[in-house]
Every structure is written in structure tokens, then in C-alpha cells.
Length: 267
Ligand code: NAI
Ligand code: 15L
Image 1 (tube, rainbow, N blue to C red):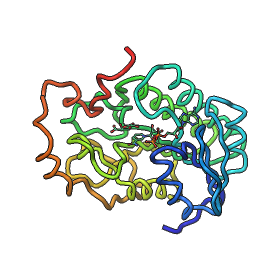
Image 2 (image 1 turned 60 degrees about the vertical axis):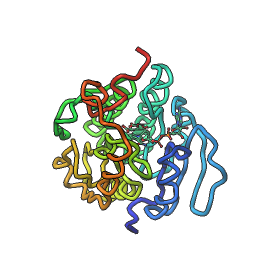
Image 3 (image 1 turned 45 degrees about the horizontal axis):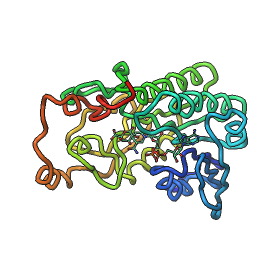
């Protein structure tokens, strides 16, 4: 993947699990990769810039956005938790980012949303981007805000966004649920690259999953993105079934797509 549509790319959340993965790979997609996080990022390597910023700090966010062509926004509170830090990082942080993008003329954003925007759908249902959000907690709600915010900034200002409803992106699936939700790191990079390079992105919601045999999500409304997963959780299936107990079908975490998130949280 060597298409270079963007000269200067901003990667937020660069110190996180997925940020570290994309830090290496996204250099193929740009001339200069600006890395940002509230945590230490180490020194800048060749074709990198490092700028620390708290997403809740509007002036700091303005600084990291100034001068870039596109943004991959991974930064934020990434699990269920108390309202205040989620408010700062995911809600105020997303607002600060889009306001800065508007001021500085950035035209494309890839936003790490989450499957927890729709976590209260049942595991026996197949949903697509036209299904209404059913957040499974404060975290999912904050990502639903980010999706709506990005739609507003597309409708008013023409800033294109791909909202990636990422399933579970890890080296391999960790439990039975993740056989359906798994997104390999290779497919994560393919997905982000497709969103950065497709000629017309518009405002798109796309589920971030590999080519898993069992799936609850249908990406038919995002074909224009041109994302083709090349990995699959299927190779992990037999070992997963052999090493994990039969699920309790009365457990809400087993019944719903969001898994344990549907019964985790501060309330
Ligand atoms: P992570 O928690 O490892 O990384 C998030 C990064 O955001 C951290 O480095 C953290 O320091 C930074 N951050 C948090 N609050 C911040 C603030 N106020 N200002 C600046 N930076 C801040 O999460 P991970 O797994 O790398 O996920 C990346 C993104 O993808 C997150 O937005 C997460 O919600 C989303 N996502 C990840 C999934 C996964 O399977 N890993 C699944 C669904 C969504
Ligand atoms: C997410 O949104 C979280 O960031 C990640 O930690 C995983 O728990 C993932 O969803 C999932 O649903 O497996």
C-alpha cells in the first residue's frame, strides 16, 4: 500500500495499543506523520513529528491539527468508565479536534468509533450503518456523540469522516465473542488506508472487522470505501472452542453484541 494522498498526517492516540501498530504502518501513507498523545511517545524517528497534547485542551489540540492534511483520530478513553474522563477525552476532545479541523481546513478524518455504539443489539441480529445506535454504556455513548459530531461537520463544512466501528483489534481473538468481532492489525491498516485514499468518502460509518465467518455486521453501505479484509478469525475457532467453557445463554454479556460492556460501568 503505497498510495500517498496526504503529505502530512496526524495520528492521535499514538502511544496506545493501536497507535503503536499504526505508527509503524502509516508512514507508508504519507510523507510526514505527526504523532500525538497525552502520554510519552519517545523521540521522533525519520519522517515523524511528536507533539504531546491533552485532547481536552482546545489550544493544545489546535496546535497539533495546524498544518496537517488529514487526521487518524485514535486518541481517547477506550473502555467503559466514569463519566468525567470520558467527557474530557471523547466528547470535549472530539469537539476540540473538529473545531480545529474546521479552522485549519483539514478535509478528511478517520475516527476510531467503536462497536459499543451498537452494543445492545443481540448477537443473533445482523445490523448495518442504517440501524440506530444502541450504546451499551457511557463509553459507547461518547463514541455515538463523535459519530454525530462528525456528521454535523460534514454537512456544514464538508469535512469527510469515516467512523470506524472497530470490533476487537488485537493480535488474535481473546474469547468466543471476538471470533465475530476480530479485526487483525493488517486489516486495521488496510481499513484506515482505504478510508484515507478512497476518492469520495463523504460521511461513512463502517464496521471494523476482518473476514470472519460469523459476523453481526454488514458493510454494504460502505462499499465506496473499497475495504477488503484479508484476514479471518476462522483459523482460531477450533482452539477457542476447545479451550473455553460453554457460554451461559442467560448472561446479558453473551446475548448482546457488546459483550461484557453491557453490564460494566459506573451506574
Ligand atoms: P488505548 O487506550 O490503548 O489508546 C488510546 C490512547 O489515547 C492512549 O495512548 C491514551 O494515552 C490516549 N488518550 C486518552 N485520553 C487522552 C486525552 N485526554 N488526550 C490525549 N490522548 C488521550 O486504545 P486502543 O486500543 O489503542 O484504541 C484506539 C482507539 O480505537 C480508541 O479511541 C478506542 O476507543 C478505539 N477502539 C479500539 C478497539 C480495540 O479493539 N483496540 C475497539 C473499538 C474501538
Ligand atoms: C472497544 O471499544 C475497546 O476499546 C476495546 O478495549 C475492546 O474491548 C473492544 O471494544 C471490544 O469490544 O472487544
